[in-house]
Image 1 (tube, rainbow, N blue to C red):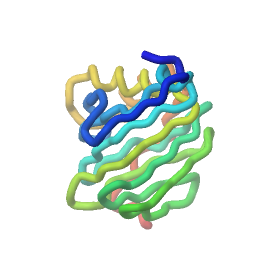
Image 2 (image 1 turned 120 degrees about the horizontal axis):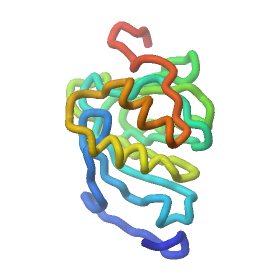
Image 3 (image 1 turned 60 degrees about the horizontal axis):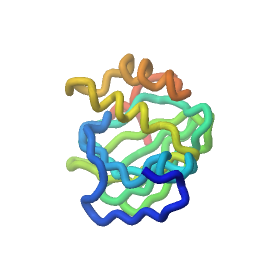
Length: 159
C-alpha cells in the first residue's frame, strides 16, 4: 500500500472485489490508504430493486456515476431519476438513498471524499448473504459515522 504519493492505474475488471450490500459485487479501484485518505472509489453492481436505506454520512461527500442501468435517488426530500451517464453528488450530512429501477443489474462508480467508508463495506462483505437488512446496515455504519434514517426506496415511492 502507498500513502497517496504514488499514482494508481487499474484496468477494467481490476481491483479487489468483495460482496457489496446492494445485491452485487463491489470492486475497489482505490482505497484511502492509497490516496493519503483523500478518496475511496469503487465500482458497484446493484441488483434490480435494490438500494441502501435512507442515511447520512457525518464527514464524507458521496458521488455516483451511473455506468449502466437506471437508478433513482432520494436526496433530502427530492427524488430524482439517474439513467446511464448521470452523475450525482451528495454533500456530507445530506439524507440520501438510491434504488435500481431497471430490470437488469446496474453498474455505478462510487466515490467517497475523504476516504473512510471502506471499513463499512469490508465488514458488510463478511456477513453471510441474506438481503440488505437496515438493522445490519445501521450497526455496521455507526462506526464510520453513517446514520440510518429510514427505509430504502420502495417501488410505490413516486418519482
